[in-house]
Amino acid sequence: MRPEIFDEPVLLWLGPVPITPTMLTSLATTATLLVVFGVVARAVVHHPAGRLAAVGRLTHGFIRGLVTEVVGRPAPGLEIFAGSLFLFIAGAALLGQLPGLAAPTANLGAASALAVLVFLAVPVVGIRSRGPLGYLRHYLRPNPLLFPLHVISEVSRTLALALRLFGNMMSGHLVVGLIVALVGLIVPIPLMLLDLLIGLLQAYIFTILSSVYIGAAIQVGQGVENE
Amino acid sequence: MSTTLANFLFEVANFLLLAAGLGWLLFKPVRRALDDERKRHEQQDEESKRLRDEAEALANEAREARRAAERELEARRKEMLAAAERETAALLDEAKKARRAEREALQGELAALREGETQALAHAVGRLAADAVRGLLEVLPGPSLDLALVRAATRELASLPPAALRSGLVEVARPLEPEARSLLGGALGVSFEARVVEELGAGVRVTTSAGQVDATASALARRAARVVGELGRKAPDAAGSPDSGPDDATTTASSDSATSETTTDPARPETTTDSARPEIVAEPSAPRPPEASHA
Image (cartoon, rainbow over all chains, first blue to last red):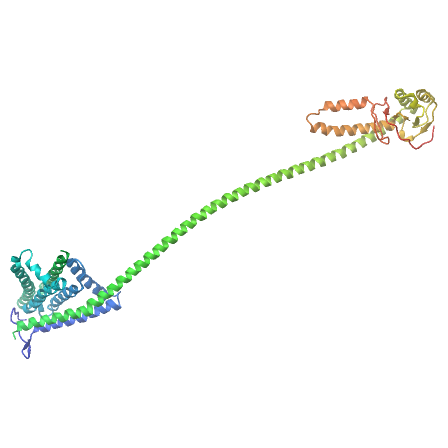
């Protein structure tokens, strides 16, 4: 395995669009998640007493509890968004442990895409909750002079989301690759477990931070409504 | 197009696809299933609550029914107890009445038995007295006994009016001796004809318009039987009545034995315990048919 941080080889070109390994890994992760959780959802519906149904209930309950704890009330749309983020990042971390594969989130473009989606989701949810003017009004509070700071805050936290995820996933993958290149196959296993743990932890962090940001937009709208 | 931009765009599209797919495949069905399950649980909770309420209502009804049953049982028990007490009292009264009636019947039966025994005893005593007199007659010479009885009769005849003596009827057990005849003729004041009646045993019986003087052995026997019968009748009265004592019976007996008696039935045999005092019957006696030849 050749560690690459920013550059990525192009497997093939579909016209002007390059097809990279990250795309294929992301696509494989998505396909695997859809298949696995499709089966799990079917088990929940048709075999509610089975183990797969229990896995589905636990996963749904975990995400629902997380969102409810952050937002303060059940939010089905946010559950889908946050759950997809958690499952995708965790699935990517798991898939990245396979030999010859790298986690898609170890790619800056993929991590940035997820962060940008969160960044875009915040105003969308805020506008849906309060309306455009109501949402934009919170940038002027408590003082219109703080508008630039609000903008910088949202951009910086989005950048922080992307870089945190990318840095953690890429660093772990890079360390494991270096150890494998230097020592062999058996020694990196603890580091791989650590990398897996870091990947799951980053999935949780990314998900909960995204929920906090989006939940804050929802609560801002509710606070304005209450006022 | 750079690979970074291509990755970015692809990841955006890929994540949107993943979110849509998971929302359609996982979250919606699971949420719907969980909602259904929650609703089912809520329905079951409501059903269980309803059943619990019904059970509590039934339990309350059962408790009320049990209390009512206990009250009814207590009332019935008291009623049955009162009825039993009433029945007991009625049975007790009935038993008392029956006992009283039985006692009265037994007392009547006892009195009848005692009366019968007294009469039997009187007859036996009469028979014994008659047998004794008869035995005495067999032992004593007949003229002496007749003479003694005639003397007793003459004393009684002396108390009667002389006019009544003239038409007197004289009956003897056997022909009188001359001395006895003379004594009796002196008492009557006229000559007389004596009719022999062997059943008299001994002595003489004079029947006048003023009364009858019976100084015969049969009169003595009848007198003894009657006295025994009267003593037998007076004895239970003296024993049953606290007012009457044995001294009264003794006095009565002694007075009976000391005085002459009268009777309304001339055919009833009169007796006396005192062989020396013949019996005087104050009422006129019916004429007796001749049963024996005149002496």
